Each structure stands twice: as C-alpha cells, then as structure tokens.
Length: 69
Image (cartoon, rainbow, N blue to C red; front, side, top):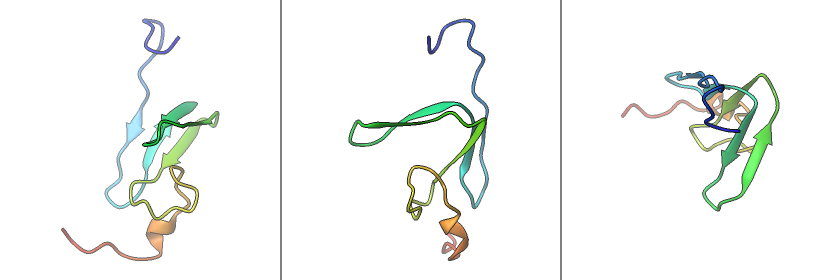
C-alpha cells in the first residue's frame, strides 16, 4: 500500500507564516503514537501548535504575530 511503486509522491506546500498544505488523503502519527486521518483532497497541518484542532490547522496562527527569529 503506502510507498508502493504505483504511489505518486505527496505534494507538501510550505508557507512562511502558515500551515503545511498536504495533498490528501493523509494519515498523521502523533507524538504519543496515535494516528489521525483525513480523506480530504488537501489538508492544512498546524506548525505553530496554537490550533485547538491540532494537528489540523484552524487558523489560530492569524490571531497573534510570531516574534521574529
């Protein structure tokens, strides 16, 4: 199934101050080993960890600006 030669690579779009946009469907393994899945054609993965729906982005990153690194 996954990683078979017939699978095409997933496209991930990186945005400077936003989520990672991933072509779906996707399955995400969390730090505690549990998995969550989405069958949507594109999902937004939270990178700021402010989302109440983590690992899915709920646009919480828009509420406050990040301090420049």
